[in-house]
Each structure stands twice: as C-alpha cells, then as structure tokens.
Length: 125
Image 1 (tube, rainbow, N blue to C red):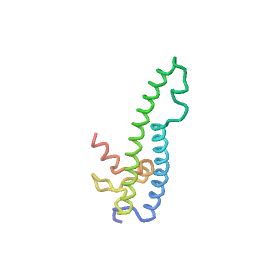
Image 2 (image 1 turned 180 degrees about the vertical axis):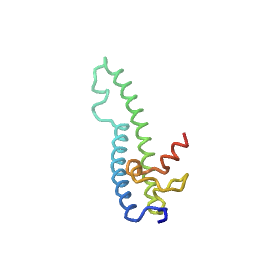
Image 3 (image 1 turned 180 degrees about the horizontal axis):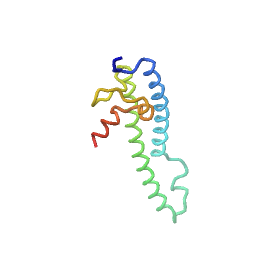
Image 4 (image 1 turned 120 degrees about the horizontal axis):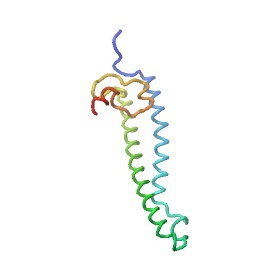
C-alpha cells in the first residue's frame, strides 16, 4: 500500500471544525483584549482618592501594555488559523512544508495551524 500524501476530505472537514472552534474562541479573546486596552469606564483613576491615583495610573499603563502584547499575539494566532483554513481549501493542510510528509493527526489536533512535523521543527532548533 502506498503512503498517504494528503488527508481525505472527511479528515480535512474534521480539522476544519477544530480550527473554526479555535478561531471563534480566539476572536472572542482578541475582542476582550482590545476592550481592555481601550476601556474607559468609571473604574478609572477619576474615581480614586489622590493617594492611590499615581499607583493606579502606573498599574493601568502596565496592564494596557500587557493587554496590547497579548492582543498582538492573539491577532497573529488568528492569522495562522485563517491560513490553515486556506490550506484546507487547497487540500494542502497537514503536509509538512519542510519534508512533504503528512503531519500526524495528534499534532494537528493539538496545534491545528502547524506547518511542520515534530522532526522538522526539532531540526530548526
């Protein structure tokens, strides 16, 4: 029996559902992070006594910076998931870009946007 060169349409559909679920959650998380960055509700330093105002402003800036970094990472994750959906459409999903071999299903279930097999990933290090 010859070695499989790509996943079947049914297998690709399974991965599409995994990716769509992760994409939906990632977009929700991204929206929450964006909201945290631009949040201007009444829980600001305006309703705080002057003693704690400076400390809260510093903490708020640090919190917004961290939220900004997390939002940036989340945005990149969303892009990777969308690229994985395109590979499913092209029927090239799950093929290692270095070796050309199929990436094991277990890896794709854990990291659905993976483009490298574990072996190829380890060789990069």
